[in-house]
Image (cartoon, rainbow, N blue to C red):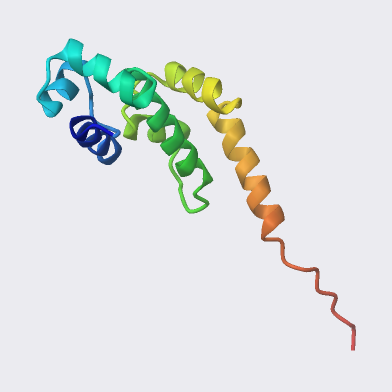
Length: 125
């Protein structure tokens, strides 16, 4: 992968909640926005904005899988730079096939079934 694109991808990954614009990404790569966009797509097979959206939705899924998280769907979306809850829900569903809430419920059920304790029967004295 091109070093400048790799630099941007690492920055995006470390700062998903930050506001990212094409100009800001191009500046980080030290390239003109038009050339940066073309090079990014050539290297990743998607536009910078699609890549960022996908990275955010994948991270959101990981956070919904975290059984220790007490954060709401809205809070997770906000932490990942998605300030519009309805867009976050639509984007998440488009990528994962479920709304964030349904995905979380599904993950909780999976976790519970995988970590089910065996039934213990007590014998009366």
